Length: 489
Image (cartoon, rainbow, N blue to C red; front, side, top):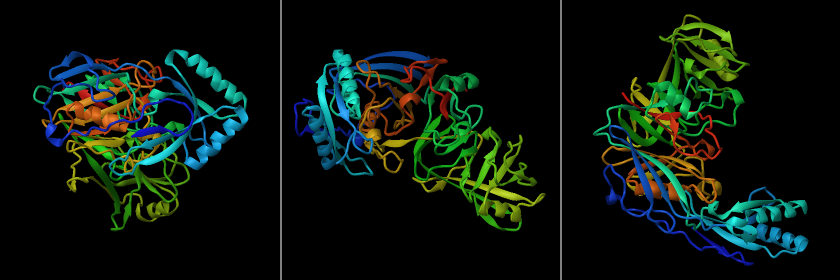
């Protein structure tokens, strides 16, 4: 990835080198002795704390801050970058109205495994040293008062060349010594959001990290719903986004793969219907399965078939009520509601068949009580090589791929060790976070042969011994949708 100044005097670095470690560089459990993989590869400082048998917590710090601040002018679409033609127009407007000579900055977002490189342009003015942030803020206010849409940018957030610093927490679990187990948790309900700390306390877990993305685009009362697959104790609580990365947990084993869910309702008259989702809001004509873990009422404006554990229809009801304990509810509206009224009569049986398929092996995964599954957000490392699947996993954007944010990462090693890591960010001068490429490099450095990115930003949190050991960027721990827990038994 690179940046070049096409005009003006904004002096910046020119390139970042992507280092892909060969597959044969696999490591067993332990902490790497080689230099830190990011920036100019500084020697990190690290401290180790033994959490429990087979579990070690490392605090890793590396790099120093040399980045400063600049002003970035927004394009007509509200983004901070655009095509060359658009950027030239914005730059001309700034020069004509403000008398400033802005810089046109070319930014090349690197290619990833499933998307080509992208070249965009930014319009920027000024370069202030880190200690002169207030002067940069004053300049930004003057431009805003003059009618420009402008933002203050810390250059360490750009995702291009930097010296850091980085502040990370890493938990490495050795399966040969660890005698506990792994689990996923959605807290007290699917619909409700909770902190990792709350879920750790409730389960008496040794370690917890935040899970995948949750749905912020639904009703506020339902925003704990995971975006992607969730299985807790063998019960499917959220359907998969087909092909999206996930971690499959069973006992003290963890496997990263891509998954698909297939849920079908079959009436005793032999008629079948596809179940479109599990424990989420319903769109028009959708058939949705709700379990008692949902923790909210079914949508209004449809039909509910309340099923006992054997699939017997206890009753049909108008939708908009809670899921009774010990039951499941099939909800439909429109065409799906018609299907329920025609094929889910009271005292009939409607069998709900649920399949979870590993897309790497093309085999079904049995939904046993010791099975837990948590969705990731983006694949980072596959079979020992960096393979960033941003497009497939729904995050093919400049902001997600290139810019630096706090990250929560999960990886497995050749010997079956589990690596949990957080890289804090959004604290200029203290820690800058990582982009996807850097996150993948970091996990390879730690020895991961498979790795995924979980939710990040303000959601990034690691709890060890009931204490939050990283520094969430919101200033306090954020309530999230699900978490991965390391249990003592």
